[in-house]
Length: 554
Ligand code: SF4
Image (tube, rainbow, N blue to C red; front, side, top):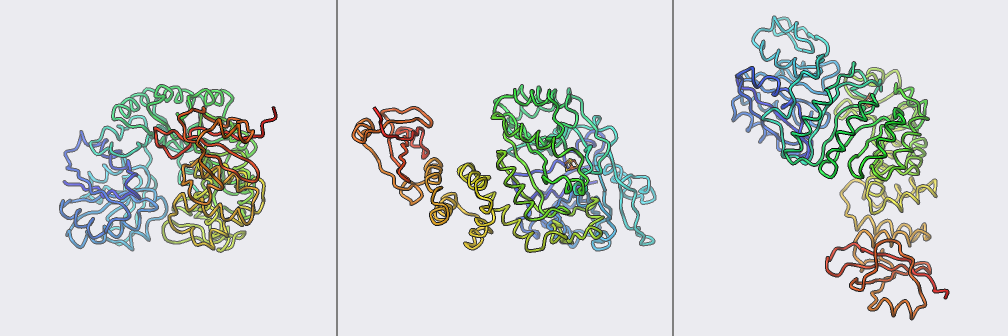
């Protein structure tokens, strides 16, 4: 039996672990022949279908994700025209809800696996020619060929998660990507109504010895970045501390991305995180909203006060990067509340702030109760929120424009500091600057770093002249051209000592060490002068030294 895996990802940097996770369970016990056709949502579906057909598989399996769903249907509906009698089985997060409608609309799909596929899919493949056995397979949905009835056996769960073979053991594990994904627990303790993991109970664990041996293997393949998929890394704080000790053994060799619940941090865990080497961790702190009522309506457990306390602690650390998120369109969450939460998180100093629209995902309580809560959403993937009782369609759209503004400016290191100051000092900056970018029609397309700087500089020159100096400094420090207007009034000086003496100035060093070999420039703005030194040998565009210049009082 030849099984082809159709592996569609949203981009080339991503690689789903679904195929290796399932293949690893059966490769040694079944003599099925496996092959894969990989693609992205930007590929041509006809070409992908032709590649699939070339393999002449008996069975095609495919995992559907939010952003790949449409492409998979495009490919599979072409494949069935080319391959008579091929059997198609689908799975993945897109099928956690009711699957009858999908199966009736796409009759070429023989069955769907709902839930965790490592045990259920091999069982189905084993009995694919014996439909009378399918009712015994947990997590299977299909339309009976005989009576046209829809059958559904619930959700597949792997009870002994630690006994699964690791995806890295499969020959299909993709070691070519810039990062690998590591799942050391499965399920989530929390009950967030918008999340597919809100119903995944209980939480199941791999042992620390298993984690250690997987990391050794991952490191031996030259991987530098590990994304830990555990839904809440710190649900069990003492395990989290032990895991961090293991991660610390890879200081300078690998970097770990974790999802952390800021309200669940014990003092011991805080001390542990604070003691870790700089650059080892990138933390994603689930926040979603800073309003207790909104969180309660969304079914999220955990006190808001302790969440804020935990987040403030993480933001105060210099050794970790903290990323936070907010969700547009949660029940009772207005545009004003969203803007105020953005300002609060930025004031706290989060390193990155992601603002995304609510997705009403199949199988979530939020989707089941959408009508009752007055939530209108797209019936097609990605099921994004369109309107709520407290946010009009236009306000949702405005929220998405704000999200784009933050990506262009706050989530870009060159502009973060200056944008933070502007947001914190001016309540209306978020809306006004977003509207300005919208009028320039730059929110919907890629925009270069220089263009971002020019736009911000021109905007501040007319609206916030007191910030022009900071923008010029940020522009120069980002390594942008000294010939363009945001560099301000800047001149090259030939002899630093003579310049300081002639102008009766003294230096107050901002960073770096002054060297005679540097090329020096002085930028003057609002009566203040700043000195920038560039390394003449390295030719790097960013200055390596800076000082503010003050009148010499001696
Ligand atoms: S949003 Fe996070 S904490 Fe909430 S259920 Fe999902 S994984 Fe768990």
